[in-house]
Image 1 (cartoon, rainbow, N blue to C red):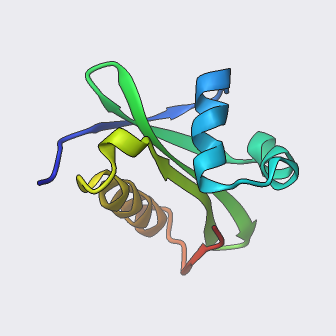
Image 2: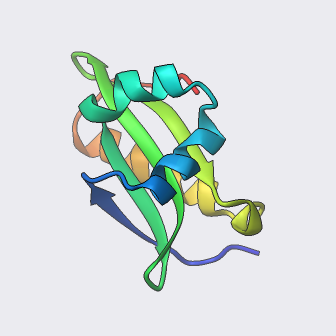
Amino acid sequence: MTINIRIEEISQIDKDIYDLLLLGDSSQEMLNDYINRSQKHVAKISEEIVGIIVIINTRPKTLEIVNIAVREEFQNKGIGKQLIKFVINMARAGKNEILAIGT
């Protein structure tokens, strides 16, 4: 069963979002290294944040997914798949040639 979500970019990271990011990357050191130089997009159902995907530009024409996480109670409902499709479409629109996954 796929749940419809709304995806939007965020710039601020609060404790709840940070905790969500730790589901996708248990290394606080790595998370702190890339979080300020990344683009962050959250998945929302109504106004509730249920997932997040984080990308960085690593080289010209290259995007890398460095973190993806979905709250446990919303896993296995297609939310992660929708987040990845969103980034694939964003990469294509930006004329990127490579989409790497490093999570």
